[in-house]
Amino acid sequence: MFKSIRHGLFAALAGFTVLICVAYTGLALVISYVTEDMLVDRLLEREAAAMGAHFRLHGAIGQPGIDLIRVYSGSEALPPLARETIAAGKQRAEIFTDTGHHYHLRTLDLRGAGGVRRVYLLADVGPLLVVSKLFQDIGGMLVSVALGLIALALLLAWLLSRRLVSPLQVLANEVRSLAPDMPDTPVVFSARGRRDEIGYLADKLGTTIADLHAALRREHAFARDVSHELRTPLTVMNNTLAQASSRPLERHEAAQLQTGLDEMRNTIEVLFALARAGHIASEVFDLRGCIEESLLRLLDDVAWRDDRLVLDLPDRLEVAGNRHLATLLVNNCLGNALFHGMPGAPLRVSFADGVLSMANAVDPGRAGTTQGFLHGQNLLQRIAGAMGWELGFHPGATAYRVDIVPLRAP
Image (tube, rainbow, N blue to C red; front, side):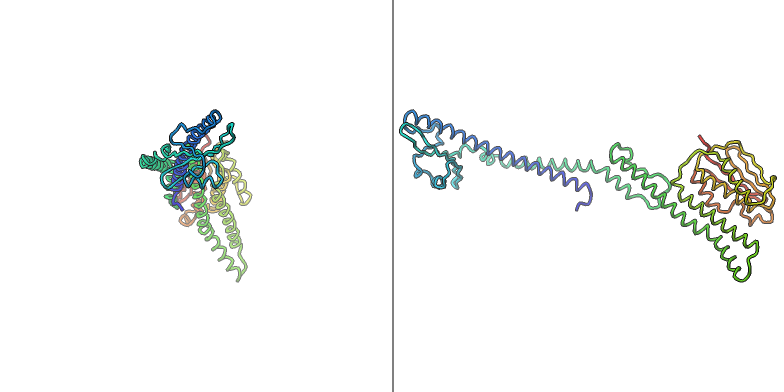
């Protein structure tokens, strides 16, 4: 079994080359010997015709015009091998001997006024065997030339196989050298610019490998985030339920359980959205609409006064990204602001110089412990990064602000 496709291709080309050489050499030998035999048969045929004409005119057996051909009136005078051939019932034959003689035998029936007379034409064609003598004289040179041509053909086959398979070997080496923990960048192979099947294969293979690595990274991030983000609310809920076995839950404890459930639901929704981020298409949409939908949803869940909300947004805010991920990002930021902000403190949402800002006041006495927008910061950063947006957190002693820099619509 060959170790590489180049070895297999070279063996196939070399085998085909040798087969063609052997086949044409054999064909040339066959043609040479057949031509030689046809020449001898034509000579015997001409002599037989001449002797038949002479016998019809003169009633006597004439002598052949070629010294190599002899006429025998009876089979008893023939050489032993020729007699055996006649005894076997053969009228025409080619006879090989160990003494170096090479005979062509033909039985001839001469018809004349006196009846039919049978004679035998025997030609010793050894001097006419040009092909055999040619191989005896220059056979070594012919073999040397044939071997040289075969060696040249094998060299050309090796060079051709190397040239044809080299791009595939380069592509295989590049694939083999890819690190398992690749950065989040497209995989580009050197054969990508070729205008043939190898270029198409390199392009599709690079895209497939990049998609596979991206899917694996999302899977690992999903498992890590599930373990990290859900552990805290589960612990709080477990501790609260453990106290419920000895006494009824108080109102704030039930609210804490509900908050934990909402927090887990939001976290799971964000995690699944991030896991599918590689398959979510980008579009142009109105970000102000997402902000208003999030605010309307939050207003239904909490007690609200008109002076707590300050909006400073343009009539339309066209951005490029994914509407679903953007809605999740805005929901989490606004929800955390309302939950962790100081009671009764206003929430300001504004857009200026390409930056969407959300700010709320915090209790100075709880500035070190309140989460503000910091809750789930890693997930929010990943949501923004999935769309190519920028996200910044700015904690302070009396306020907490988050800045979102979306991609503006072209």
